[in-house]
Image 1: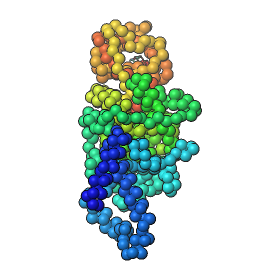
Image 2: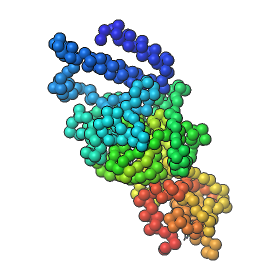
Image 3: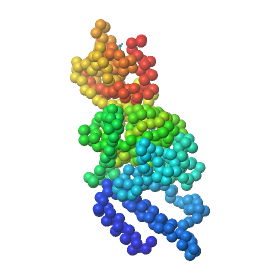
Image 4: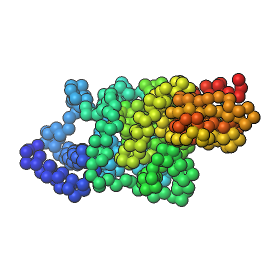
Length: 434
Ligand SMILES: Nc1ncnc2c1ncn2[C@@H]1O[C@@H]2COP(=O)(O)O[C@H]2[C@H]1O
Ligand SMILES: Nc1ncnc2c1ncn2[C@@H]1O[C@@H]2COP(=O)(O)O[C@H]2[C@H]1O
């Protein structure tokens, strides 16, 4: 390319940046050059037969490509303008690479595969240059090494930056031109959203306007049983809330987790700009709601990160939670709230219905039964309020603050979903059975 051609390209790019004011400038530039390359290659392709007749080789042969791959010093990487990149089409007017059919199923435009999540299809681990294969053909979590090998050198492959450092990332806060996607929902979809997803505790931290923004930015995605929704090692594009079905998680091929309706996943890569930490597979047919990376980062990142760091230290010290992995403790943190009580105030009252489970973060309390008086005392790290939730029964005792009390609360749905192995411990330690 001549220098003049180079300057022309830059001038054209500058013009587009000025008129379109993209939020994510780097992504926009990447998209711009990718599209230019595509256009140029297409034009060359159309000239191929004429060139060949004239004895000119416009394209390297298969062997030449292989040689190039084997000799490369910089790893080739998954295109940053990945098929399901939420910015690429919107910012650059490029044709969307994925389409949604009437049933909301995602298919590659080429129509070659049935993977509803296009870019997340697994990579054949034996062939770093291989085309992505269909989901059914691989072990979950396999292909990680190959995927890592394809990451851009600038990609945060092995380390998590702190969220506060990430807050400086231009894609989060630069400029005020960011416009969240706004989807049109059918009345039936709206009803489902209102009935379940909108009530997710993750969204309870949001003010009305932010909640509205998030809800309308959601996109329904159906994942058939066995589909890889996320592939370990990939770049993060969407955050998901599960409306229906079960999703299993695999790290390096080993199952580490499973979650169902009301749960969410895919937050880590978006929070830390790190590769996907696990492969997520639809264990059953699933209905998911996907939130694009930008909307997640602009609206949900700060609150989620704050809560996780706020409760991280405390949850590590709670004996009954010691069987939880650090990931499970983080997910638990997402669902927690804090309440304060003055001396003499009741947190729960014997005979009443129970909605919450409690941990004591600071202060002391006593457990009182109407006919027995004080039957126990509680301090930092202790829990109470599990019986009503475990047995769907009224509160078995009253718990009253005996010093200024700060409790961490977990609602019923989180209790049923997020305590994992701790539930068995709670059942074993049932105070009414001893
Ligand atoms: N044990 C686990 N370790 C890491 N990620 C997990 C685990 N269990 C579930 N996940 C989810 O799997 C997701 C894969 O993509 P992310 O890394 O963006 O976010 C991850 C989590 O939401
Ligand atoms: N012997 C006991 N009988 C009843 N509740 C108890 C007892 N010891 C501790 N508690 C706690 O007091 C809580 C009152 O609300 P829950 O019944 O939901 O759960 C109860 C237990 O967490």
